[in-house]
Image (cartoon, rainbow, N blue to C red; front, side):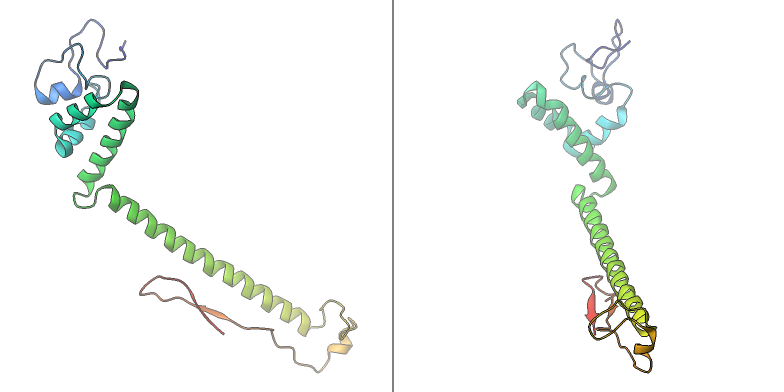
Amino acid sequence: MKESGGRKQGAASPCAACKLLRRRCAHDCVFAPYFPADEPHKFANVHKVFGASNVNKMLQELPVHQRGDAVSSMVYEANARVRDPVYGCVGAISSLQQQIDTLQTQLALAQAEVVHLKVRQTASYSHHGFAPTSPTNSGSPSSNHGSQVKPIFDMDVVMDQASLGEPMWSC
């Protein structure tokens, strides 16, 4: 059974921080509630990026109710820094933003294709005499014979592959 302090009842098992630092884990250890012994990788990365002394200072300066969120943020940033030492979280955010931009471009292309197909379909129906009744068209197929119906507009979307920027419209 575990206490909220991250140590087993009745045992003097050190928290992950004290274990890594090879020191005795005191009863009031500031690390124990946030770095349990069964998750040593959490503190290892935080220690590697921020240093145990700095983490200790940060945690002691914060109110107890904010420490859990602070540790969670430090663990996230430390893991990001281990994966990408130069950019850390910013690299992950930038990568996600690029994915969003690419997906928005693909969505715009798909929407433009839908509009293009609807216009083409409407023009095809008009050409075959299936257009809705209008003052100039009585609706009979014979009234459309011999006339060439052109689409109102014809547009194609051209994608600049080098920049993957906004779609360029050509008419």
